[in-house]
Length: 180
Image (spheres, rainbow, N blue to C red):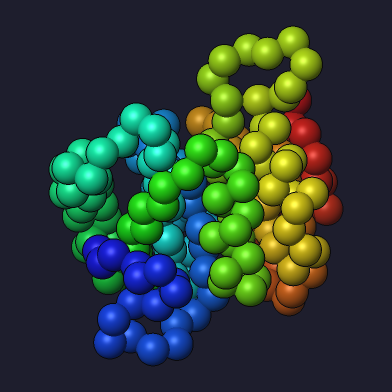
């Protein structure tokens, strides 16, 4: 596992394959989401970027270093699987106050990608649990795949238009939208 530079490149790596961007926190749901992305979406040659957004107000520089070390140990668990599957797993940490805006900005920086996010655990009477994914789908071009996943189930899916249908490993891609 390596850190990604601000321009999205890994030092000494040059160009890499397609990107799967996974929004993560340091919790069990994020580990499950990352595992799902590695098993179900990642293909040999892909770059998997685990993206964590720090709250600019509450996170200090000291806690950033501690957080990166914690994520590094969390992602080290996947090293053998990533080598076997021939994918490159990286961590990227960004600062900001709007997680959804940063997810969109980072996804756009890769040109085309598959963006995978979890769902909201709090019940809100107006917004759905997949509101972050829906926001990202509205703001990103049609070349991006956007998924909201909860407990291994796709709750929201917006298909991208580049030709990688085979990478979804048996999913029914014709059924986009909510799975109830």
